[in-house]
Length: 300
Image (cartoon, rainbow, N blue to C red; front, side, top):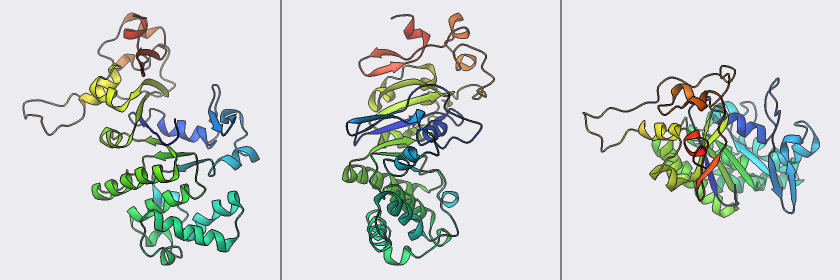
């Protein structure tokens, strides 16, 4: 993910989007763990493999919330109900930036103002239940940006918001990305939001990336059968009454239910014999556009 760019991560529920995000900041719940692979994070001239760090160790704690921050799905359950908004925003500032409480309070007020919360001097003393859903989400964004992170992970940040508040939050995140020069990993199942927000898209299925490309390429020329299925299932205002939506058959299987081969094979309309036996690797089909499918791997 390049600085000041937004990477959209899409897929059905259960495809591994949130687990991937949590693995980056070392918050996978036991007995889960990162078993293999790398999570390479560039800190200036230094490259750190986050997968090798102790989730509870001092190095990961210095990165989590400071260099890499996350906006969680539900602001009402993510914010602590017994602490004021101000205390929750000040905590990472005091911990990571070593500021005193007075300076941290001043910065917290500035952050609330930056995310568009009116009367920030008053709101900083209020509790989460005293704020609307949109204001709680803005407070979460302020908390995530409090230490000016290099990477901001947004896990379905507009799920519980109505359409008008969604639009305001998305515009706010775009503006703040430019102001703070932050890269964003935007997780959602809403392809319309991704079209508006992202520079590049990663499509996930069953914990694996099945397609990656610039946003325009994915919408105009999807390669993987799963991505094509997602696009065909989007309602359109141009649709006639005679045309029905084409949903993807079946459901996402559990990770332990897949015995071998491509995880999408049981639901794929273009399956081949090799799909049952081997997992396809991500293959560059055209410049900047990769897909993990035997349709293209066999041609290479």
